[in-house]
Length: 154
Image (cartoon, rainbow, N blue to C red; front, side):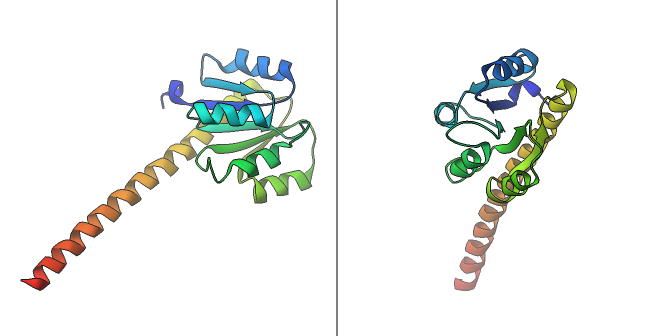
């Protein structure tokens, strides 16, 4: 897997967390950061992102609310929630509303977070490949139906 192709958006209102994430992963992934949900949406409008990692507890919009709000417009990125608080209700809500792939706790271990991001990218890649294969199958099916109609008409 070419990790340089993995584009990660990290959303957190705490600037030192954003800086630590950038310092840890800028050589491994294409890192985008945002201090708020509004800033994150601006990044998503400009950049192709494979994985969205967001803090849960932020002012104005929680991580779950942010993830839920972008599902329709940005359905493809893998969603991951990061929090310093153990809250089972937030975990359940994240899975049900925000379509969260993985729930992680702060502070993160760099190797564990890198591994989690790489696994999330594998899921992303498999989903993309599945879409490609489904589209190819639809085209072949249309071609077969066309040939069948031609044969029935002759």
